[in-house]
Image (tube, rainbow, N blue to C red):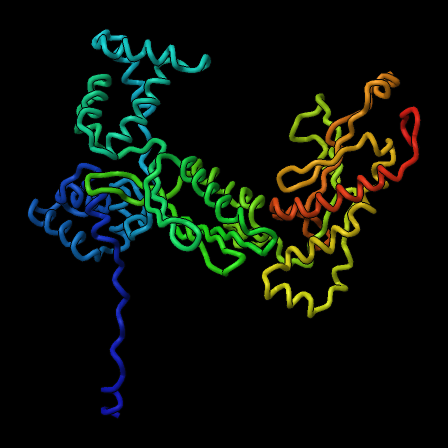
Length: 466
């Protein structure tokens, strides 16, 4: 019995709660606090006695060197530093706020005091350059905030001195962390493109570069299966472009950064950043055959769900709010009897990475038959088809003699569009359709359309057909 008891394992205590000590030190320095002051403020929130200066300093040094901090104390430290426990544990922090509002208040106060002729001159220039509905003070404040971000990035002393002269703020105050448009680190690796590692200013620049890479990468893909995959690996974003011909990838990674005294620090994207970044999967619809968005959903989910749909555009009603106007109607669909495709054929095209081309080619065979009845209201000679990005448009263009016959002018212009959709659970959703695929369907449809027009007898005086 005694021997057995000696083999019972000792109870394991609760694992210590840890934070990132280096992150704690960096945030403390950004807040302008000494180790003693940080420990004193955190202890006060915890309801503990202050202790001697030496004890407080040693406590903060231990937090920063080991990262071992009680969970409750971590919450107090986060409150003192104006952050969250998750950030103390290593998550990317939110970027610091910009200085636009602060600069505007300072400008108004200094102008009222009449203490800076240079500021009056700068305001006069801002008034001439700003939009009609923007106040010069706001325009100048926005400009100064952007220039301060550049100053912090480059550590250019002349920029700090110029902003200090106009605002009356000390250079030390201007060096405190701030963010305006944000800087972004973009890294590109892999096939079909140069290795790149560059810093860009503002989210619009990084999204522009990603869109340009999308276009370059897929411009020679033709109608082979090509994939664009978007995912978030916080705080980074990653875009993988799969080459349809050789099965090789191009990978783009980008992250928002903020300069501080130690260099660049990764930060989380703001809501405005995400507004532009979330547009990227939609931009890929005009280039790739398959797109996987940040939600992890691939579109189309199955190539055999593809359909060619004829969409009728509604008449715009100026008396109805734009967002409540009737949406487009799908008035015809070609399913192409895709289920009849032999398995062996599908396997052969999968091996050659051309399943998307196979299915769309199968669908376009019946496109003219479903479109032709929709054009019966007017003679075919008044209809025209044209290519657009990711769709084919069908226009009605009446000659003047026909147009003048009506007391109420008939609708003209883009009446129908042909788009690629996926059928999922008896509903439809738009899917990617690249220019090569659009061109192939357009060529076949144009041939059928011109053939039908040539075969028509002389219709005489143009009039609506019933």
